[in-house]
Image (cartoon, rainbow, N blue to C red; front, side):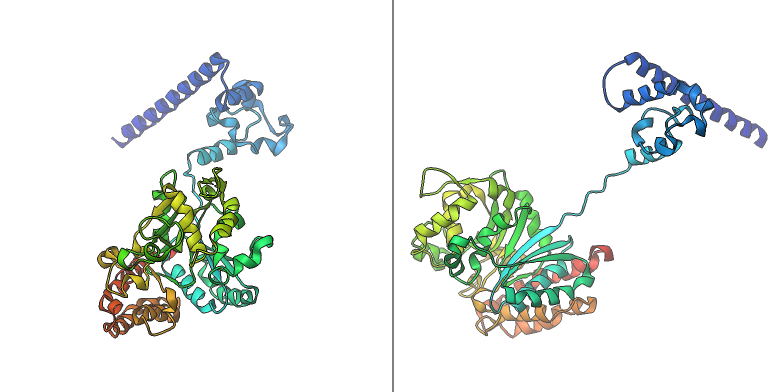
Amino acid sequence: MRRYLRVVVLCVACGLCSLLYAFSQLAVSLEEGAGGGGGKPQAAVASWLAGGGRGAVRGAGTAARPGGSDRCKDFPLCYWNPYWMLPSDVCGMNCFWEAAFRYSLKIQPVEKMHLAVVACGERLEETMTMLKSAIIFSIKPLQFHIFAEDQLHHSFKGRLDSWSFLQTFNYTLYPITFPSENAAEWKKLFKPCASQRLFLPLILKEVDSLLYVDTDILFLRPVDDIWSLLKKFNSTQIAAMAPEHEEPRIGWYNRFARHPYYGKTGVNSGVMLMNMTRMRRKYFKNDMTTVRLQWGDILMPLLKKYKLNITWGDQDLLNIMFFHNPESLFVFPCQWNYRPDHCIYGSNCQEAEEEGIFILHGNRGVYHDDKQPAFRAVYEALRNCSFEDDNIRSLLKPLELELQKTVHTYCGKIYKIFIKQLAKSVRDRYARSPKEK
């Protein structure tokens, strides 16, 4: 019985081979008959015919190949030719590798997230804590663009190089740079170096999209999450920011501004997500001329017109620009830029109450004084945290105990929103595979 079974299997195999051979001959005949068109199939058949057809393969030896091993260099030669009917100038290795390349999945390069910060004066430690919070929870690799005064470069390099074992980020240090003809005026606007952010689209010309943050920012969830908002931009939007205030009764712009501003309460530029390719291309409407101006051309005229009326420097200029071009701004909720104003007089960021704080912004120096101890507690916890797994895992309990000591303040009364997303980020970090961390 086994003998008969073997015979049947052998016959079926022979039949299949014969069928495949017949189909291959039919394919060659059709190609020869077509005699036109373009592309690889026709070129391959022409090459095969030039080599003398199938008979040339049988009689071909090493001496018959003038090109020697060169025939094994060009993969596409055997596009339509089965291995048993190779032309004389094609190496069998070609068909093996070409098939592998033709049907292999294309691996897309991993997208890098570009993050920029500007640090001047006594901002080294604050900036390093911000960068640490970005590294700890993020999934995709990060590219840091750090603009700093020359005397800070050595310290930044030393600290960042000590983190190189993580292999999850790269960084570039830049000097503070303003247009030479107005450098002094730009540098003293609002705070030293703060207006540097206005020139990022012009300096980082090779960067498509960028997340700019102030030094006093802390990421309580992966940078990947805010980076994904770029995909929500419509065709006219070039940047994203959060409102300056949620409650108009305590808003600054709607009560005190002496210049145009975006929306009902203005926007805060401490966290600014940008599609810089669009920013460089756009022509902006303005109230200085009927001609629309590009980013590099509008900044100085704006400053000259409004410099006596602006209080918050570069942020005011951005508000003026987006007042005239509201269709260009994507507004994300307050939980992406949570500041003391959202709780100092009582909670007024509903999204943070429901989902927790995503990005903490400790403006007004609250990380370094006792006016808002809840903000300081989070900052101190992340500043003292190291990259060891056990240290990150044990971050939450001591922090919660510190936050419970702040309930005498309005922000402390709602301390759970400060750790809600942070706890989720810690859980997610350990749920990911080691390669993703």
